[in-house]
Amino acid sequence: MSATITILAQHLLNGVLIGCAYALIAMGLTMIFGVMNIANFAHGEFYMLGGFVAFYLVSLMGLDYFAALPLAVAIVVALAIVLQHSIFRRLREAPMMTTTLVTIGLSILLENAALLLWGPQPQSIPTPFPTKPLSFFGVYTTPLYLFCMAVTAALIVVGHVLIRRTRMGKAMRATFQNKESAALVGIRIDRIYAYAFAFGAALAAAAGAVLGGFIPVEPATGGIITLKAFVVVILGGMGSFVGAIVGGLLLGLAEALGAGYMPTGWKDAIGFFAVILVLLFRPEGLFKRV
Amino acid sequence: MRGLPVAAALIVVALCAVPLVVHDEYFLHLFIVSGVFVIAVLGLDLIVGYVGQLSLAHAAFFAMGAYTSALLFVRLKWSMWAGLPAAALLVGLIALVLGSVILRTRGHRFIIITVVFAELMKLVATNWVDMTRGFMGLPGLAVPPLWIPGIGTIDITAKSHFYYVVLFAAIVAFLLCRALVRSSVGHKFVLVRENEPLAESLGISAFRYSMIAFVVGAALAAAAGSLYAHYVGFVSPDLFNFSYVTIMLIMVILGGKGTLVGPALGAVIFTFLPELLREASHWRMIVFATILIVATLFMPKGIIFPLITHLVPRNWRLRNARAA
Image 1: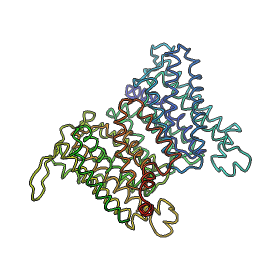
Image 2 (image 1 turned 90 degrees about the horizontal axis):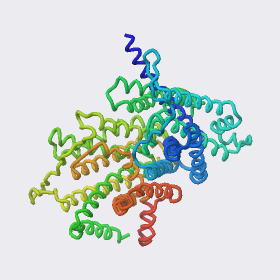
Image 3 (image 1 turned 120 degrees about the vertical axis):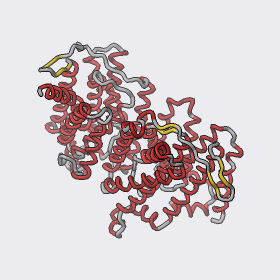
Image 4 (image 1 turned 45 degrees about the vertical axis):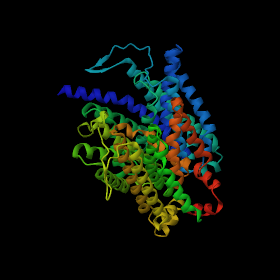
């Protein structure tokens, strides 16, 4: 009896980290969606690039692991700012078909650029943590895992506070709710666009850099991550930050349980089924807007 | 105006002459594959170009058609002549069920659900090993002989023969789509695309007309998939890869969405072009992605169709403009 509970606890623990990562990525995606009205199909590529840049800095340039993580995020954010200025700025007020096709194109572009730069093989970021597992009441984990979990959880809180408690966050939420009124009270919409995009890219890149030590990154990762993040956004309700956080954690836990108790290969289907069910019975998502 | 049927007849004659002129097996192969893509892409143009809904499930319909036909062949010994219509019918029905759920939503949600559906179907093809053999795929599909009344049975396994089957299918698909978009149904497609509230206020159900385009488009994709499966002789979950839907979208967008002729030509050009770029295969997708971004941002009408309308005499242009 207690063995089954231990196994269950093990599966749940395994799901927390990936759930936190989903939450981080979905928060940015929902922000970009709400502010810019763009379903960013290239969003998962920021996760992938965060992982690859961190890998490059640590493995190939010999940088310290703890210095490499923030630097990798900074590099990806710089790239995101360039993309925002060159491409996404033009998508303001563009029809949905245009914005979607452009972000799909961008996703393929970034994936293949990564393929060209780093090759197709999955890469793990070397970390300074000891690999010896820790055991709590029969549930096993590693120092690296605890570190990743702490960082992603802290970033969720930071992101949430930024959105909820700062002037910029307030301005973003105002733009989110009503663009014209926000502009009327003096909010610089173009600046909000740039910040929202950089914010989203930073969260995704941070998730990628942190998880890269744990789950190997490969160029094709971005596409799957984008899809999962969309699943979370639809589950949580498009435009809901709390929904993105709770939805991300739920999906992570559900997938971990699925990986534990279902035949292999089907765990990715859980989120997809959930989306179709939500669409049928509760199209506005599990949580209401903002 | 009078020149158009003559030109069309000349094009058909030229297409019929291809196997007589092209003896290189590889080029003939490219012609056959581009014919298959023409059929699939015409279906996509109905959805994307005419009713204006961005469906990312189209390549999945193609792959499902290929799998249906392949499974009927492997498990029940159905030949392609029975498998192709069965695939079109079954996938059309699946699109009807799927559409009844997802066509009620509009906008981003619709796009995301189509890609989620496509991914789900890939998981089924990969993981339902007892039925689909998973990653190993289904090999050994054959092209059946063709029986023509008055002539008898001919073997069409040779590329130069199978080419005509695909050409015939592509012409039929084109005429079918052309008839559809020129009918009153097609005019309603365009109205739904251009102004949905107006369409609804006139009692034209956006849901119903989107559904017609969605189902017909899916059936065409499935028919194309069935031809492709029997021609290549092998299906695997790779058919569900996202790159297929990307390439089909490039064909439609660069061809000129909502014109049928443009996407059809786009299908031919973008089947040949990647092969010519084979030397730089790493750069191929980067080039394609760049083309897609630039064309979507700066050339919303596409490249190929506007180019033709510039080249052909003006009195044809009027008619094409009206058709578009």
